[in-house]
Length: 258
Image 1 (spheres, rainbow, N blue to C red):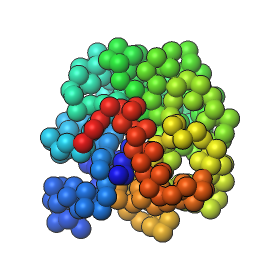
Image 2 (spheres, rainbow, N blue to C red):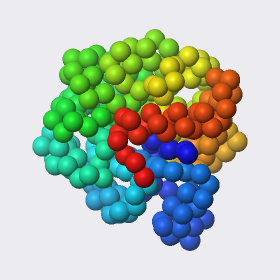
Image 3 (cartoon, helix red, strand yellow):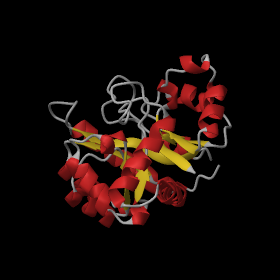
C-alpha cells in the first residue's frame, strides 16, 4: 500500500510505456503503488496536467505555482480558490520559498507564498510547501499567515531536526524523497529516524531526484518503494509498517482515497 505523495506526472518520460499514460498507471498499480499526487508547478501547464490525469481514481492533484516559476502569470487568491473547488484538487501548491535558484530581491516569492496560504485557508485545503535555503523565512511566513489553520507538508525535506520540530508545531508533516537514500544526507536521515510515526509522508518528486540505486537517472513513482525501504531500515521497522503508516498519514492529511 504505497503512496507517492509528490510527483510531476506531466513531466514523465513515458517512452517505456509507448507514451501511453494509462499503461503507465496500470504498471504502477501492479507494482504496489496505490495512489499518486500530481503536483502543479505553473498555471500555464495546469490544464494539460489536469486533463492528463483525467478521472483516474488513484491520482489526485494540487493547484499552485512553484516558487521558481517566473515566466508564467502569478496566481491570484481567487484563481487558486476557483481551481481548488475541483474535487480532484486536494491541496494548494507547490508553493514556498527557494533562495537557492532565485537571486536578488525575492519579495515577489514571499508575496506569492502568502497568497497561496490565504487561498488554502479560504478553501480549507492543506498546503504543499517547497523550502530550499529559506528555512527561517519559510517558517516566518507560515507562522505570520496562520498556516496552522490548514496545515500541510514540507515536501522533499532537506533541512534539520530543528526545522522539522518547528514545522510540526505549525501542524505540518514532513515528506521524505529519494534524498534520504543518499549517504551524505545525514541530517535528513536523522529526521527520518526521530520523527513521530504520524507526521511523515514519502515521495519521489518524480521525474527528479531518483533514489539509490537509480540516482542520476529518471525517477518514476514506483521508486518510492526505495524511499520506504530506507526509512524502514533507519527506524528499525518493517517495510510494510512504513508503507502503511505513510499512506495513512497521506490520506488523513489530504483526504484522497483511491
